[in-house]
Image (tube, rainbow, N blue to C red; front, top):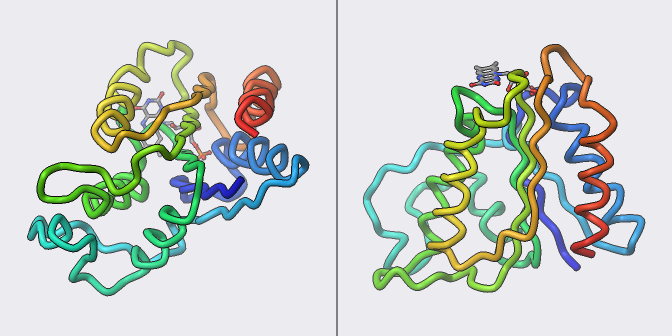
Length: 180
Ligand SMILES: Cc1cc2nc3c(=O)[nH]c(=O)nc-3n(C[C@H](O)[C@H](O)[C@H](O)COP(=O)(O)O)c2cc1C
């Protein structure tokens, strides 16, 4: 199984990486092919809303999204990993998701139908109701793209760096086992 991880945190030693690594390591141990994309290191310009991509699936902006799109199209599983920023995804991930309009066509048919998605979110709040907006966004997005949302982990209480509680790391491992 081929997996691409859209890693949306700017911190490679923070909290979100702990969930992403738990999933990545587990999938690799089980023979999976995993590519982690550190979106913060890539050149991804914001969508310009021209809608050209709906016609032919390609974007007029020549940047790293070209490769990201290729990796997504090649993958069976897409992992969306992000810290919660103002109840939504980080800007790094949101920009990549905006540019994913290229995965639709003019009749709103999906070019990624049948792929699977997993979402990983870390947040400072202790209460999971802070995740309602982001989970709603993921659900509507995957519905539209006809992607099957096979699992999610939200790790609350992440105030500081590299402090995801074991129970959430274990949840991420179990989730990866269940999809591989
Ligand atoms: C710009 C910004 C916005 C944030 N917004 C929220 C928020 O809305 N709710 C919340 O619980 N935590 C919020 N946080 C805290 C982070 O989601 C949390 O610490 C996360 O685990 C950081 O992930 P990282 O270590 O991968 O960077 C925010 C942090 C930053 C820097």
